[in-house]
Length: 628
Image 1 (cartoon, helix red, strand yellow):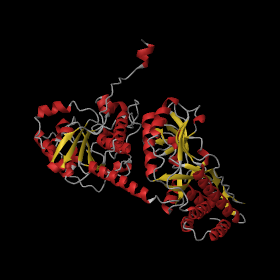
Image 2 (spheres, one colour; image 1 turned 90 degrees about the vertical axis):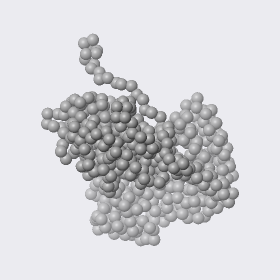
Image 3 (tube, one colour; image 1 turned 180 degrees about the horizontal axis):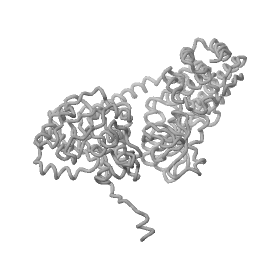
Image 4 (tube, one colour; image 1 turned 30 degrees about the vertical axis):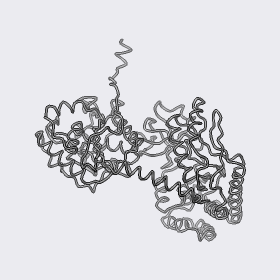
């Protein structure tokens, strides 16, 4: 760090020496980061922890705009909590389900107090101070029961705040704007140094906050199809504006460069094949300007990663639409009123009732046994491996239903021949089932997988659909593997190691000690040996949990061999068993539920519907069109 830059930073630090983030700044500076990038990192992460800022700095090490003096945009929102918030969230879900997504779904329920304004990174601390001062001044002045009236038109639905209550909110906004401007003015005599592309410059810092003076409102739906108006109005009437509410004034920020961009979320990991392509991790958010896509190849878009700041090409079918506010940063908040005593009582009663209802659902142990998704050899036959193997031994994608790449294995690509991956459709199927389980609020608290790669991949993408891929680790259990008599190779396949799987970004529980080691699997085992293995391993897994749903991802044979021991049924005849297994489709599932009071388990309907789709044969346009 330049001496002049450090000295000028010290002057600013003295002005705010009692603030909590000073120690964070000093720590990051001691790590060798320049002042201007430290301030940028803190602004981009909400100035919360050293870990957040450090991670941001490392992620953005190749960000071409890292040294550009581009400030964040900030807005002050008044957000409801308590019973009113719960009703609004219920409306959000139902309106999206019944009438599709509209513009209001891009942002959470709120009343705008101050529209977006710019504030240089070095000045954000003054916004925090202003919010706290004004929050203390207006504490307990906000109405416990908001006076809201429903307003509807062909493109807008929302609550308008009555004048009496709106005036209080506007006074709060004006006070915050005045306080923030005053604090900014008092420090304008201090010049802040910044090092931009090797040049040390100085400038005055300004911060102009504009309070909202228009009709205050809480938007429910915006820019929707006119034929949905009546349905939306009916849903809105279920919201009681008189519900108790605690108002929370919250400061948010966003990257001003991407205000009019579309936000996409990466569904799958993508490793760049060319230098101008963007690296994607599942969950990454990408900014895309739809007006700049005219020269991009079909199926591709060019975007900027929110995580890294890098720009490049990416396959659009690896992404889905995200909400505008998903990239916003929450900075500070102040609670402006406690719910009234009556409101607290009502809210607590409802919350406890919901909690008890949830407990009644999850107190019963559940066992969900599922077959893996569509595998490559299931679609392309035994020759799939030869089709994708190049002369130099590398993998190539020969059909859109082949995955874009394969995880690295220590013995190279050859072990995929007997341990095939999911097809691209199999990946999609698995995530779709996970999303369906999430929608049905299935409380999955553990997941076990056969060591076969197709099962691990299925488990991974189901967890993605459930939004649990970072919270629940996959436990690899060789005892869940297929009946080895059915293995085409007549030997036990060489499976990927936990280390290889972890390096391939699968969240594997490396601390788990399996019940049946891979070395214990016997090639061409008898039916009796297979049934005995399945019965022993499923009992050990089930006995390890007292509540929640255990998800088993295995093979077509798993649905029968792992549920019958649990519900107390004897094994089937081997010929009957083989006939049954042939009917199990990709991601077919069975569900067992414990009846604790009766000390038994029973098979019941699975929590989600089956997945049915038709065949799609390979198409040769030359023989079909040109030579036809």
